[in-house]
Length: 376
Image (tube, rainbow, N blue to C red; front, side, top):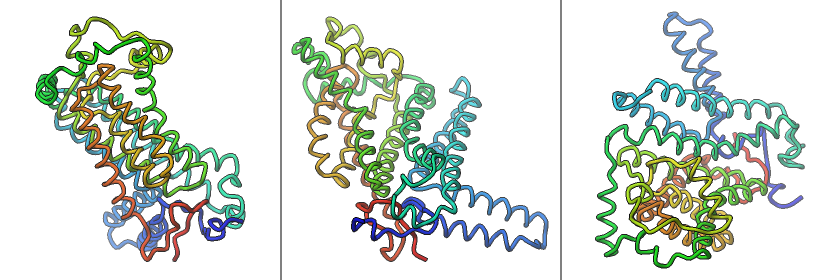
């Protein structure tokens, strides 16, 4: 048994992001006990509802609070600016459904592990669970990727919620002031089939950064590191989504269409990008670049939790940043905005995870394999 597993302790299979779960559940049960003989029916019902709500949210961790917080903020904006939207009730219904699905998934994953013998998981890790337990555990950890995709695609309906017109002219002028040229047009002189193909490959690497880093942490059962990285990304994306709602930018691909001499031709990577862009492109949400923001959040996560992977990712991320301008997807200022947003996601996310840690140093460190325990 390795040293990390010898240090493993577990009472009810609590994950690092669930360190406060027992305390909240205990408070909810205490509230229920006090409601056995309420003096006033109205007061009793209110306490029952409050206790039930606390119980439902008990399984949510730092990532969920960021995700649910974004849904609350965006839903509030939908209500405030509903007159600028075509189907505000439909959007609110979808938001509510997604929030309920997140909470339900957290509860389902927590419930299936109740009563599992501690000794078995201590010895064999998460793989010792039943098929049902492993199924819910997997989806509990990997649904964030689907959540990010949903939020990004939803922005297509929200970009003109506050301002009715695109604001690209401001960024085009800023890029020209900064560089003396229009970068996407200027780069066209260097375009060749080989260079285009390399740049489109670099652009595609964005889709694997978080998957690879998360996959390594998940395989090593580094749950604290895994949820830290997901929280960094969630904060970075949430900040970028809100900025995109208040400052709609459609990208050079649309705003500067016709300014270049032709399409960028390449090989299979170029064809794949064209396919993705054709069926999944969102018109808007270009500033800050969510590609860059997500990449930098993952890059900082690698720096903190898997340093060797940081050095592997760094040159790819830098090439990916250049490719966003080369491929006419973003302005230069979008890249800087994404760098700042991704870094903010890391800084704020790290603070959130630190606030979520149990007091008196009882939590297991990020390198611990297996699940952690809250000492009582």
